[in-house]
Image (cartoon, rainbow, N blue to C red):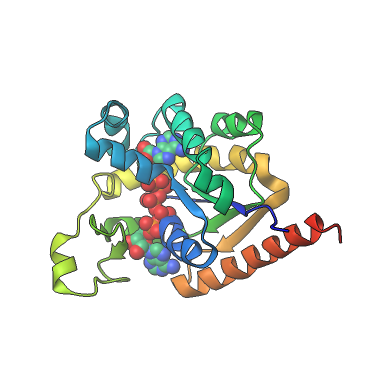
Length: 222
Ligand code: AP5
């Protein structure tokens, strides 16, 4: 019999490498990646009502009001693919009240990953980050350069990636991190994100493989 699909949350400060790791996790485990940052940026880009509301918050590095984000996430998680393939929630919950919203709906992950990276490195990563609007891939001017000139020419910078805004995003993250973690303490796993991305992924890979195995074992009653 097929076991329940994997449900994963990934958290960490701005530029701790969530998006980068999610690319690799999705490739290996086939989970549905639900990134609130990506979903919100898509709404902004499409000029929807949600996007217009979210834009000023995002551009100044503040959190978008809960009701907007929570409605978006719960709608996405209820779609069939996420139910069938499992999900990887990235950038949500980001506050205690967001965590509570999920608890009320009985939406719980199997594992809560926390990527840890020192502050000075986070700032450098944000300021050097570039995005490919065509593929959605994440690059860095020094760490991960684009494969060719065609990609290089179309890369964009996020409006919230200036040093000043990164510092305020980091502060907001720190204000909330502990209470969010308290909701998932017994299933949390800290991972040192200040290593090459392949090394970080290796640890996440073995963690998720183990969690998946445990789920299968408990389902078959072992
Ligand atoms: P969001 O998009 O979630 O931004 P974030 O949490 O600040 O995270 P980032 O996307 O900046 O970083 P990341 O951890 O994904 O790192 P990445 O892999 O790109 O949210 C944006 C905004 O949307 C928020 O500020 C808020 O306004 C709003 N929002 C979102 N969710 C919300 C919510 N739940 N409630 C309310 N508002 C919400 O990597 C960063 C850089 O480092 C890249 O250049 C990458 O190439 C490089 N890098 C990655 N890994 C490594 C490595 N191992 N070594 C060296 N370099 C690396």
